[in-house]
Length: 263
Image 1 (tube, rainbow, N blue to C red):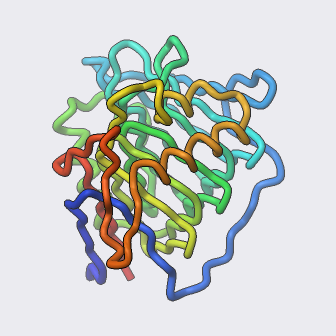
Image 2 (tube, rainbow, N blue to C red; image 1 turned 60 degrees about the vertical axis):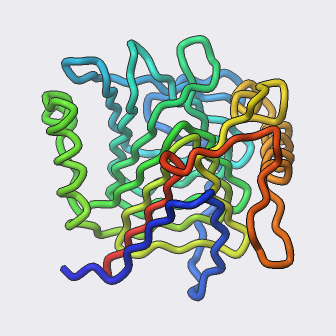
């Protein structure tokens, strides 16, 4: 299969792309996440398996559908740096998705989705993570086999999935990532109001920050903080150049956006 589109952004990464194609969005009516622990409108999700070094945690789902009125917290435990979510169907994220530690605070870990189906981020959705990787292969690796791999072997497995992409990725909401964002799908669509901002960190956590978003149990409050954060760290001038607020710092090496679409 021939790669048709490959774009990498190693800039002060602010991305807002207007789609040429109109892609239908399936908005979920209720949260349905296999194995999540519910407390009101907040769902906590923990790994069910770890690799030998405890650096990578894994969980497998029959369904992963997050309502726009709910919050899902992916909980990093035991020194994990990556949380791999293996989903046997479409992924629909319409609410708030955070990466957190065992204390419930924002955690700078990488969230990875392996989806045997389309991956959709709705217009009201917010993904607030340390880093994000999305892959949509035609066949999912076995969770037990993945958990038996070393870190380097796992990375090699991810690379092999890039040549076997079968489902679409549609980003219509917001993604805030401390480090990289990587999207690998058969087709990748972004809406006119989608925003992906990576590589930034608040100099003072009392300011609008990813840490503040992760503490919210109200989706309305979380979205408000995110909107204030986006408007305060990046301003677009007449030439559409990003102007950085002095209260925030960017690291261009970590702030990378990779989009790969295979026809």
